Length: 215
Image (cartoon, helix red, strand yellow):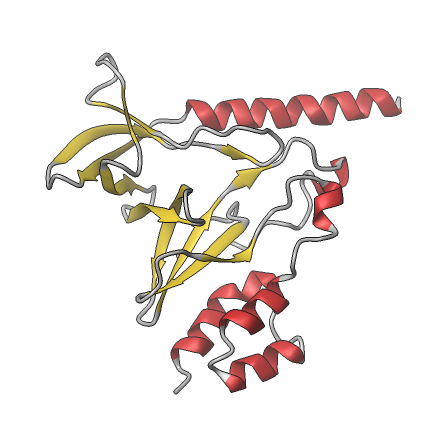
């Protein structure tokens, strides 16, 4: 019985990941040469449980047209139409000296907050359907579980919340609180609140808002 439950949960996970990979969205690409192309976009889905991930955006003018691929070398921004008639902005962000990854932009005055949804097929079944996600918000998807932050004078984004590659790696992954205290060290009042554990991961927008008001 236990084996059947595990098999069923894994099957559900595989189906969900497969469905996400099939999704096409109406939107546009703003290219680095200044051109804007309008059509249908398919965003890359990141799985922390595999060695190699696909980071390119797929584009086609219409459903029957040929597909083209774009990445950080030729894309400035990707714009996606959401259900609420708002436009989500996606940018390739430098997360290390040689790596660029696609994130949804949540822009503030002092910093840019970048959000994305990643999966991990190697995580324990206890993580499936757990409380790792975030409550619904107009700023980010309830599925977003990784967040990076970038000041205007910085070239490489810093992680605030990340999903570990596997359960053993989770033991060595820095907590949101420790990362936030280090990154926002120039705001003593915020650091003090973080030390007192006044903010949880799900309150990341409140943390950024607190930093924005810090003088």
